[in-house]
Length: 258
Image (cartoon, rainbow, N blue to C red; front, side, top):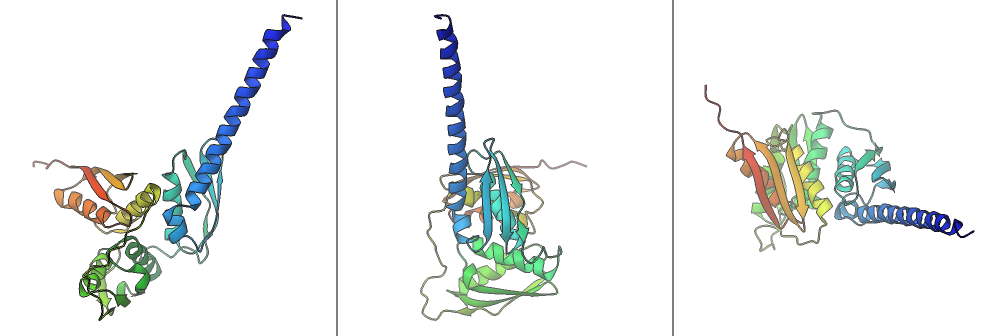
C-alpha cells in the first residue's frame, strides 16, 4: 500500500502542472484579445469595423469579420502580429465593398486617406479625398497654410498618385503653423502605422524595413540603396502618431564599382 503513495504523488503533480499550464495559456490568450481591442488602432481606425479576435493556446490569432477598407485589414493584421505572445496571425477578414483593383482610383484614394490619418502634423479626419484618373483633389479644412502644404506633400508621395489639386480652406483664427496631437499610443499600434506608411510611400514601398517599437521609441533597420532613402524612412516614421523618437539603424548599400 505504501508503494502506491509515490505513484499517487506523481499523478497529482502531473495533474497540477497540466492544469497550471492550461490556465497560463488561457490567460495569455485572453490578454492578447484584450490588448488588441484596447489598442489605439482598434479603438481609433477600426472602431467601426466588425472584427472578432480569437487566440489559441499556441499563440495563433485568428481574425474574422468584416472591415470597410483593405487598409483596415492590413492594419488589424500588423497590430495584432506585434502584440506580446502572438506567433502567427490567420487573417480571414473580409472587406465589405471588396478590394479595389491595384492602381485604380479607389485603391489610390484608400492609400491617401490612410496615410493622412497616420501623420500627426496633418488633419486626416478633416480632409476629403477624391481621385480621378490618378489625380487627387483634396478638400476640407487645414489649420494653417503650412499644414495645407504638408497635406499636399504627403499625398503626392503616395504610390500611384499622378498629381495633386489642393482645394482645402485654411482656418482664419488658427495661430499655430501645424497641428500637434499628443496621444498615448501603444507600441503595437505605432509599429503597424509605421509599416503601412512605409509600404504606401512611393519611395519606400520596395524597401524591406524591420520596425520595432519600445515605449514609443521606434527602431528601424534593414538596407537602403542610399542615404537619402535612409533619411526618408526616418522622416516618415517620426511623424506617425505616438512616435517619440526614431533610432535609425538602416544600412546603406555599398556603391558598386564598374
